[in-house]
Image (cartoon, rainbow, N blue to C red; front, side):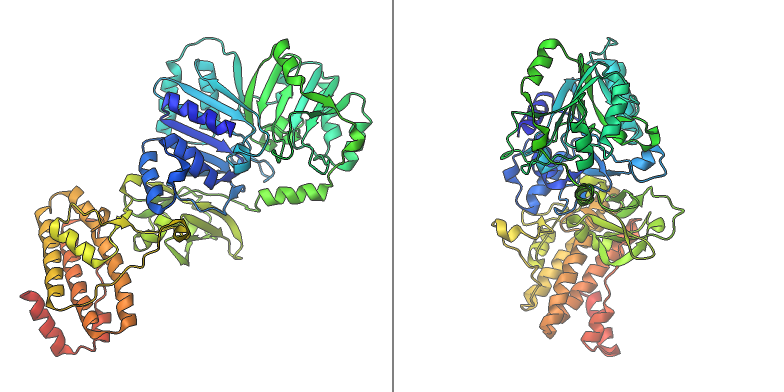
Length: 606
């Protein structure tokens, strides 16, 4: 994985604070296990359990990491396990197009440290194939002058990062040298037509994909000055190229067009020749441009082009000769075209039929959802990970609380948008705000909880654990643990419980004017009130299954103790917590008014 090694070397060298990526299709597994671990200085082998990913999340909080991808091209087979931000891009919206044909296709990595910055761009997507088995092409450039810096800033500005990020980048760019750049970071927003940037009379084109009207497009390129065009396509093991049979015959008859093969390609190791390179007599362009109208911008309105990007720079005769030395002519009768329907089916496998996109944020500061989706659309609903049994109106999402299902949200970040016909409009992963405040840890039993509260409700113990596990963890040497309930074992159980919760009450009272400590006691610590409620709910379900009266009565008293703590907390803190429902216990225990009166007296003198 040469690209990964190059990436690691740059990361190690400059210690980047900003790590921004764009990609067409996105595989979360390659991103998390290889790219993000490289940024955090970890090894992929370290990621096995939920605890490992949460440790990675803590490291990633130190970096400004963003990934933009085409909204229809996410690989959803692997769940998202980190808190890194993924932004879906609907190219049509960025370009102001009325169609859904344009795609977001640039492959860019921008790394900026305190003293230096680098741009990596080319043909590679953030996919397993893109970083391992495909034959790709990439260019690495250090950004040392204002001209190149602002080319990068102009590109990312269209993707709408935070204004504070753009302000900081503009300050950085203005501090660089004002010298003339020797290369250009070319993209839709500063390069209307790639071909006019690389003028010449002979053109070599490395591209795996071609327009369905390839002959017509190449004729348009000829009109711009190129009298000879050499194509280096991807040739499958069955000797097929991604050009329709009809168009291939036309190209075979055109003496100005020659099809060549790169002798360095090893089809047994490299599944796809995915590089996109445009070489004229004096210039080379390496980026995301396939040989298509929408990629190149030829006879295509700006609003209908794909969003593409790459590096254009001068190339001398020696470099050009070396690059072309691996090419040889191929007998075009030995290759075959690909039927249009076959290419369409391949495309459908990559690009999902989503008709919209949106980004939803889970804000851990206040345990609510946020979205900038157009609030005038009232017909869409969304299934959210904190409660998959419900659908919520998308236009009313802002401010919706997920506190009652926050543990599910810690593990599962997938959401789905539906229309009134119950058709899926979009599927994406939640982004997260207030990441350092995610209440990841808790206790797996009341024994551990009571011990923690008895020692110090604000301190916690080493027995706290990540509150969720990945589905396959039992296959990685980590046994799944069911949350055990607290079995009544005599008067010592009541004593331990009363002491623990009295300690919690005393701690709330002692810190009633300290909002930060109240926030921790209510929401953030492993022994927080919301974690106590979650643990209680799990334990109570088992008590009901066991149907042991002593255990049920014990849990009834425990519920009243928890509610007493919550009532006191709510008295002092503005962010409220719902109390537990004790009526269900009274019904299960078949208590009458006399029993309830006795219980209240007992609680008053405990």
